[in-house]
Amino acid sequence: MTEILEKIIKEKISADHLLYVSMKYTKTCDVMINLIRRWKIMMDSAFDGLLEKAKKKKMVKKIPSAPKLKLDLIKEVFKDEPDVMDAVREYEMFKLIDILKNTKEGEFRKGVCLRITYRGDEVAVNLDKLKEYAEILERFINYTKLFLSSK
Image (cartoon, rainbow, N blue to C red; front, side, top):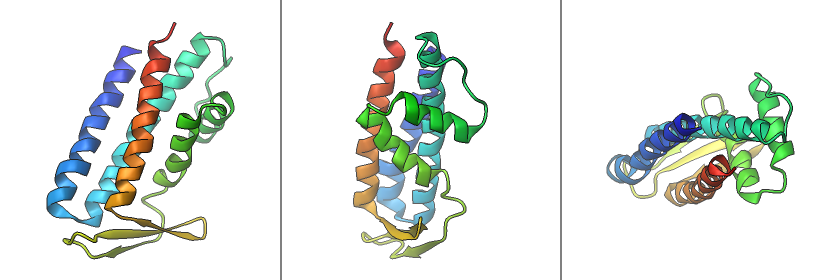
């Protein structure tokens, strides 16, 4: 479990750097996309860790290898954990970041905005939205740390 936690923390440090340093100085949509990719990688590791621990606790019998089935299992096992479910909702968009239609606005300015079309709706990803995602992921990572370190 410790190597999974280390991987999660390493990804989180990289993501935090992108959010609090790179975004501050560059203000580009490419940095936003890279940040979302980094968060997705971090969440993949966290989901794997949660499922492995859940298997040890005999909450699940078998961990599927397919990403979609893993996500479905996470939704089933942790349906009563709001911190996990909030993160799952964001993850479902994050994993599609490379294929979703997007428009870049106001790059290199304070009002930089990445408009993403997701499930027929337009999501405006700006600096405030990134901070909102960061808070959701902070709660998710804290829950994950607690769950992985529990007996």
